[in-house]
Length: 264
Image (tube, rainbow, N blue to C red; front, side, top):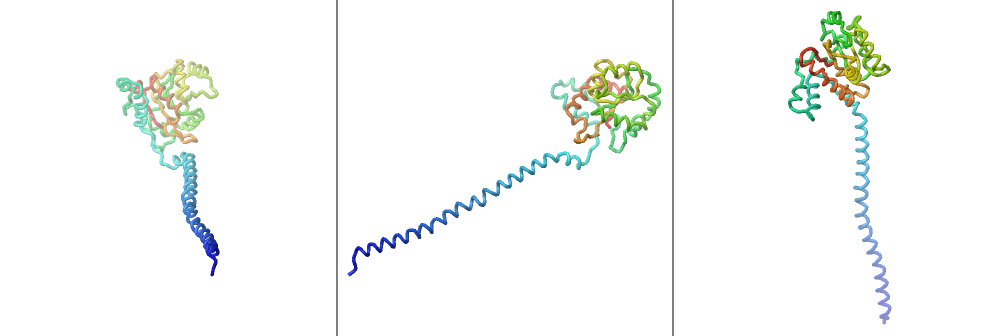
């Protein structure tokens, strides 16, 4: 007869063998469920985020490239009119804003980007030879050209050779030229054209070194862009100084009809 103790021992042994088999079968199912999300959902979005961030950084650096490829639109009187209304509309009364508005009759024909500087000046001022001969007033010029820098002023002076003839041109910028020297030159000589920056022209007017009594034309170098593709009105300091200069007396002279504005 078999011993009952032997049967109990066999049951224990068989129970011990089946227990590990059940544990080993249950563990892989748990680990697979945990590994799937880590492999599928954690690693890939991080890579995508890095790529999108890099793409955004690259786009920010290539804004100038986008502007360079886009079609350039020539400036029109409405551009300056809107700029002035936006600037003065923040802190001026309705009556003051009306007094600072420029009508279309205050403007010369705008450059359509097909002109050189000389050809544009010839178009807007066909009677230049007569105006030049009749001008004999000191401390003033017949034509005032406003641009963004001293270097650009020199470029414009060179490019107007075919137009200006033998008339005298005065450099009205701060680089390498003291304001006292410019005041002295205006007091002693007769100049027909002044080319410079709005800050220096404004300073000369404030010191009574330059008056605009005989000035018939004021040309803004509106469409030209620098190396960063900025126009003169895209540069905050130049924009502010130009608007201040216009407000001093030029807007009033244009409204009275004694001066015309041109956008080159």
